Every structure is written in C-alpha cells, then in structure tokens.
Length: 322
Image 1 (cartoon, rainbow, N blue to C red):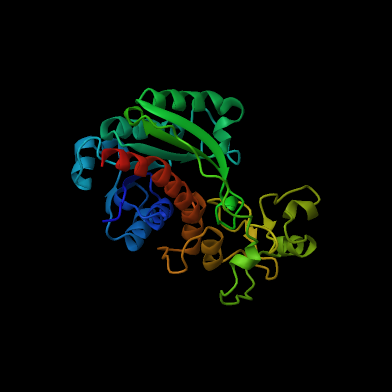
Image 2 (image 1 turned 135 degrees about the vertical axis):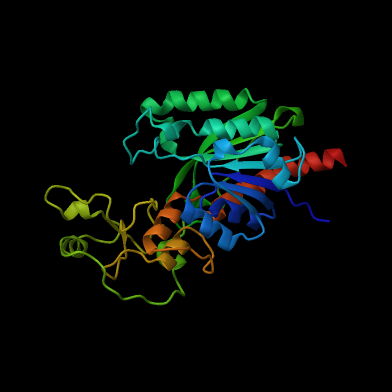
C-alpha cells in the first residue's frame, strides 16, 4: 500500500494548500476555517475533508483528534497559514494588530497534536523592520514546542506557479525523529502568464472606469498605472505582461488588468495564475473569488513543499520504523 501522509489544515481558506497536499499524495483529514465564503468554497472542492467552521480558539485538541481519527503523535503534517495582514508590506503593519497573534492558536494545536512535521506559511514582511521581534517570538514558541525549526523566504514562481509570489515558509520536525528540516530547491524557470493562460476562452470584454482606462492605454504591459498618473496614484493597478509571471495576486479585487483587453483579469485567468485547476469552483461573486485566491497558498507551490517533506523526512521515518 502506498504511503499517504495524514494532514490537518488550519486557517485553511478556500483550500489552496489542501489541494497542493492532495496533489502530493496526502490525505487531508480536517480543515479549520472561520470565513463563511471560504468554507463554502472549501466544502465544494474537498467534500471528503471534515471542516470545522468557526473560531479556531474554540477547537479542542481532543475534538481535533476525534475528527481526524488519530491519537496524539500520529499526525504526519500540521499545516497552517495564520492571517498575515498585520505583517504585510502592503498594509499598515501595526505591531498590535490582533491578527499577528493568531499563530498562538496554531502553536496550541501543535503542542497538543504533536505531529511529526509542521508547515506554516506567512508573508515575508514578517522578517522586515519592526515586525522582526514578532518573527523572533514565533520562532521561539515553535522551537519550545520540541521541534527543530527553519524558516525561509521562497518564491512560488520557481515551483510551477506562473505568479511572482514570495512567502515565508516555516518547516518544523519533531525532535525525537532526529531529522533536520530542509527546503526544496527551485524546480522550474518562471512561467510567463501568457503561456499559462493559453487555451482559455477569449474574453474581449471591457470593464474599467474611464480614469483608469486612460491610464491603462498609456502604460505598457508589466507597468503600474502610477507611471502614467501625474501624482503617481493607482500604483497598485498593473497592466500585466504576457511575457512575465503574474504579479502577486492580493485579496483586493481589480488590481491586475489584462494586457490586451481593458478589464481586470477574470476568475478563470486568476485560477491559472495561481495554479488552481480549471474545474476548481469558487462560490459567490468574482470579488469574493479574487479575495479567496489572493489569500490562498498556490496549490503547486504547496505540492512542491509537501513532496519535499514527504521524501526527505516522512518516508525516512517510515523506512526506519519498518
């Protein structure tokens, strides 16, 4: 029988990381998420996974183990992407932002479940400037949970994702396993967005305000609208280039515009740029889909990380036990 690592996913969003784990051959037993729309999308695409819809602080260790059908220490991977808005370079970067401390709930589950490995994802802004002390606190808490821990800024564009997306990845291995966490080497060259979108139906629609349309016309593919604005406004609005990976997709809708047609990227294009399958269904409006994709871990990115962990840590442990 083939080895199928068991995963519990926290702060699961719409299921991007879970899809990546499944692509890597894992079984995602439990997912935890509080956002209504994200839960609806997750359930539509991952019907076999038990979803805890609510506040993670109310989820007990015993209930988590019961849902997973496991005992303490049997879980292979605890996954999680605690909310990152408080650390983001695109936000206000407030040290006191309560979202910065949701990682403590992740640590609580980590210490109670005692998985063999954990994988945690966040924004690279966590290791910049005034946020560094929070990063140091997180590393201390994780190491004091009896894990060997390493963190590295990785870029999804080198792992089959046609998107320039840097993320801070934490990998921890339970100390009793005697193994050191490592990270996958780059696997692919950056994939141009134009190549990634090939085969999609042509959408020549127009959906843009007049002021932005004038800027869209004046900038070249790959440039921000700010380059054509006399005050440098609309710097987050970008006409994407077909010759380069897509810029980072954020949760804010209508910031990435097609290079040929005066409109934002549509949902089908966003899914391709984030490495979702074409048949992955997003519940609700296009704006909600944009937010879900912008907040998620690109599936192929997580697949690469999960495969590395499986082959270099989990399978090593299985062989030692056999």
